[in-house]
Image 1 (cartoon, rainbow, N blue to C red):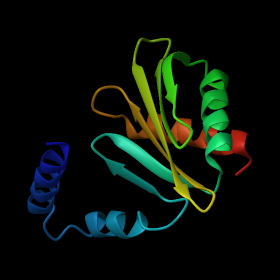
Image 2: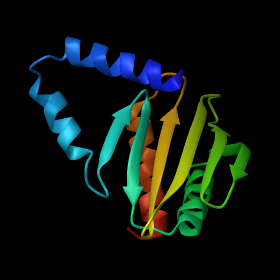
Image 3: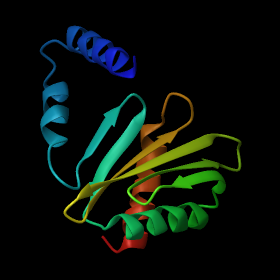
Image 4: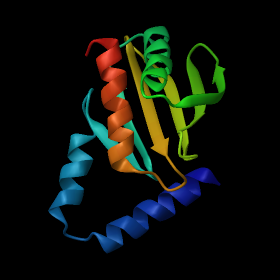
Length: 131
């Protein structure tokens, strides 16, 4: 069901953004390690980090930004962190080991996503990881 919904969103986006160069640039930019892609309110980035280091960096970044962790699930190759900012806005972070010492980290701030706030969290994760 989630795949069908994602496909419908993609098809709708293609219809709305027909001929938009920014859309094409965004699709091309999402192909490499270290680039961002913004899908369904979640800003994803692939980091050249082993999963454990990425997990630790994400947790430290939240602490540095004074975002309280309300729940987390770490399965060793994928995990999720739920947190809450001081203003009550929820933050969701998902991590997935992509192999070859690369970890994908997705950040969504709020229900619909806030790109600038997600970028701020990604920047802190990269800083903590030394990237």
